Length: 447
Image (cartoon, rainbow, N blue to C red; front, top):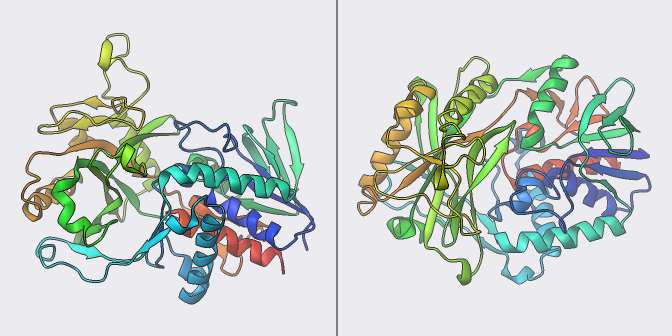
């Protein structure tokens, strides 16, 4: 059994891996390194880093199906994948202050009014609750600390030497702090995908290319979608154009107390959605991503980065902005035929530059924005009250770097079997899949 396990990233994947080890009285040392803060000190605006990562500051929905959120069953088969999902969900329940409030929705029938225009994916979802995630994080963190896990917070991993099994960080007490490992779990999340890509290039790791995943965050009053929400709370509308290599889906639906959140990755801004739990936060809004997957793009990672930068660059010069239009940071755009920008959970306007023209957006999307425009036009037919009562934040993007080839039994690199890639680093999309990947690796380390 390995003595020194180092986990890069305190996101859902790494935390579930550590939990599996602690639960089974692992006798070695477990160290988790993260750029962010522990759950007691983490601030709401720190979306991408810190304990539980983006999953710990999310909408609190755990998808419960092997066809959603990545290709876990590709590695394990469906039966094992569902077993791993159960372990992740059980962890969220055990550290939940009110576990009885964790409920599963499981819609069955696709309504007829959707069929002429969209497909509708129906699958079970466990609802944890956004507000509860903060308390879950604290309880979970305390359990791991009591179990002997060492956390190194606000530390950035600057290099990993796979050949000599050394992790290098920018720890404040020394210029280059190094830590040796017997086994490494690489679970950096979205904020570290760029670093993972550099490692893949440095060590010439065999990879699998991934499609572009990019779109917009759509926002509208909830009443327009209520007849569908009553059928499927976390609905997923989709359509596919196989001859064009393009598919679209609504993604990460938030209702009742929904708000759009700014994400900063690689210095660029994109948008995501969240929802508070409880009547005191209700604003009767719904938001969801309209996410487009595009096959066949050469260098999809670079293509996506360029698109985001082009959209972000449309902000007016900060030296000229005043009042509500003063540029706080590099930000995306907001477009609506009739609505003002929405509010954040803190009661501020979402940081985006309102625009009356989509010319720049269409140019940035290189012709692919037409698919999103058609998607919105057909939603207006399915939901007749919607009309022009909606807005979009541009862009929403899922940065998927090339996926490294791994051994299926333990997700270890084919060239370095003591290094395991999990979570976003292995193209997982969502809390449940990421946590399941971390759990799978820990199971193998215990053998």
